[in-house]
Amino acid sequence: MRRLRFLKLGGSAITDKTREAIAQEDVIRRVAVQVKQARETNPALSLVLGHGSGSFGHFAAKKFGYGQPNNWRAYAETGAAAARLNRIVTDAFLAAGMPVVTMQPSASACCRDGELVELAVEPIRAALAHSLIPLVYGDVAFDEVRGRAIISTETQFAYLAPILKPQQIILAGMVEGVFTSDPFKDTAAELIREITPGTLPQIESQLRGSHGVDVTGGMMAKVKGMVALVQREPTLRVHIISALREGMIERALTQEDFSEGTIIHA
Image (cartoon, rainbow, N blue to C red; front, top):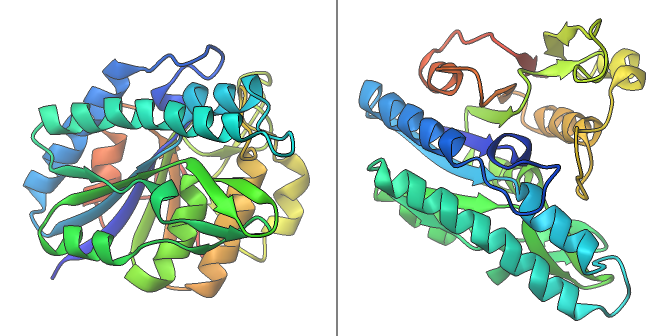
């Protein structure tokens, strides 16, 4: 029986988010090897891969003024920057022997007042049916109300999950989960092991924004989005982990009782 998982590589892990358009290619290569090892351990593993645009898309959006009305040059430049990082990720996975196929989000996505309402699913289904690894990424999108939007990988996963029904979503970033405060600034920051719809209100005030420049929202937005998703899909479990910890992604993909990082569930 094939088990479907969604895996996102955070922009904080695969780029230097404090410098423009700098990819952490060694990290990307190590992750690709872990995915290969996971597929070898479990040939039934089916995977939708995604990544953030990190210092590629986010810096371009700010540099060219993506938020300025009718600034369509910014739309083109931001989309091109995100695609450049996607090429690096794709090439690294192909070099590791992983059959990754990019599904450019902006080619089919449509938003309505900031909400993703349309994304081509059938090409992703077809890729999965042929044991390929479809790859989405944080990208630009047209918006019927606002003109344009930026759609994060988490937003795309939330759209796809009710349709494709993954058992697990793994969000792999720079740190190994959700902390009570910014672990880069506060040595007393504590890892929050578990988040549910019932516990979110108590910890929401403790959550802090992501480290570095991020125009799609920080950790709080990611957590709230995933909590809303598990409420709609109660059998789904979301794991927030580190892409930098050796072997952590492979363990998350292969261990049924995986409990590292932060778990979000209904």
